Amino acid sequence: MVVEITTTKALSMEPRKKILICGGGIAGPACAWWLTKYGFSVVVVEKASTFRDGGQNVDVKGAGQQVINLMGLTEQIEARNTLECGQKWLDAAGKVVAVFPKGGFGSLTSDFEILRGDFARVLFDATRSTCEYRFGTSVAGIEEIEDGVRVTFVDGSTEEFELIICADGLSSSTRDLALAQETRLRYLGAYMAFFKIPRRPEDDFWACSVNGIGGTMIHLRPGGPTETTVLITYPVSDFVLQRPSTLSRQDMLRTVLKGRGAVAERIFDELDEVQDFYFGPMSQVQASAWSKGRLVLLGDAAHCPTPFTGKGTALALVGAYVLAGEIKMRSTHVKAFQTYESILRPYAERSQQELSPRLIRLMHVKTRFGIFVARIVQRFFGSMLMQALLKPSAAAKARKIDEDFVLPVYW
View: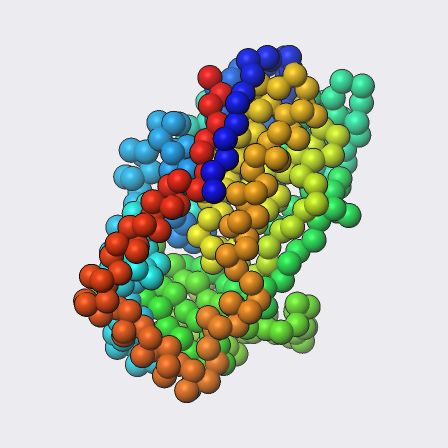
């Protein structure tokens, strides 16, 4: 399915009026790049006290890759490629069960693999001279005024802007100021943790994945010269995280790693030294409306699909491009926000529909017999014969991703 749109050439919002973007990750700076290109004055606020280099491996596919090309950042992104060769499935002892090369059928690895922090750094460097960044602050209050919005920041200071773009992620505090009633989190039945551990001499450029008893799934991926990135997911039936006050999140993670094999033991031993640690439910953002007044949602704050879809980064880039283009082209912010949502929402919802609680349960096999069957399937599809037979299918899937969304033209 593709989206086709015909744009107009009207520009009524004054380009030099200030637009506030909340969130300094990927969606916010990408949108800032386009808005400053169109002549708007942009302020980006980020709750973190400094630029955040952390995060997991992300890939950029289809329309997201086209946006990067239009921004002229392809060379900078490719220079930071993790060089991941493909995916290996391992058993509990760390021995290889099956190998899925980059671009092969069923492989975790795409052509455009980069660490989230490295990607964000490219966008930050591309925008730091054209817009204003403020770290260590966030929005505490919003008041609509006649021709804009008055924002109160957490330090008590106030400032007026024409628009607010909320791009501060899954758990957006800015979104909750205006669209709390319109937003819900769809829990998918699992918790996830991601962080980095020191790279070892035996670590190569392959992603390594392990199924563990109880449904624990572990992925180790190349994270640079000195680090390896870790993603752990495991099923939890209840959305509410219940834990004794004496247990840290690392302690909770240890309970699902214990007895899960050699890779799990390595991670278990490294947890005390982990600095950049995320732990929380695997959820999608579902918002019945993406805007209210002069505030509009962007990226994960609007439609987080979860990292398991591999679509979050592309959605952020495409959304940033479309939103900035609509702000440029439409006669009012109301029309701009409405058209932006009508163009992007079908694409975002298709991405979210790729995952369901039932599929997550199937992926996280719990029993020894289930893991035994999973390894048979992995060996079958990872065999050279099946990879050769399914190569046309993998290529067709790649073409479908490229054709899934047609970018509007805003110039």
